[in-house]
Amino acid sequence: MRLTFKMALQITGRWPPKQRKIAVLVNQVHLLHREFQSCNPVLVARNDLKYGLKLARDAIVCQTTLPAELSHGIIMIETCVICLELTDVGNMFLIDGCLHRYCFSCMKLHVENKLLHAMVPKCLNLKSTAA
Image 1 (cartoon, rainbow, N blue to C red):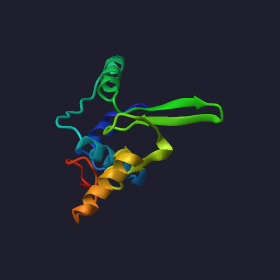
Image 2: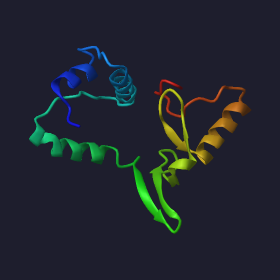
Image 3: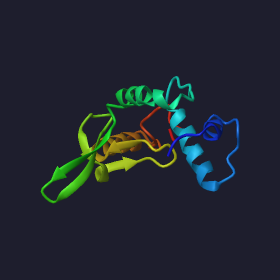
Image 4: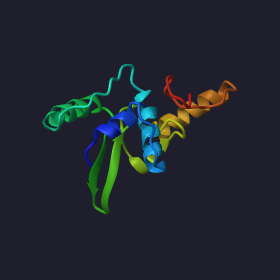
């Protein structure tokens, strides 16, 4: 699917989406947009997309989900941004509301620490909407 000018206007908030699925997708884009210290979406020509995709891949190299082959099939692995361990996506804890993911061991330590200090455990990312 290629991004149209109308979609770019919807993502930047200049044109309200009319379809529910598009509205949900735009909302997810806005949640992800808040995670960056600086982010300025720009509509680029189709022939410039390869350069933009290369920059995006380089920027998210520390938290990628990759297929890994095992003897019993293929699983998806992701790097935990806290401990930098490669972890099966099925063993990652997904935070409701902000969509951050952390390995169970990092999340367990975080929850234990918060409960020890009589605090409600929330997302580990301080800038998160769920923090």
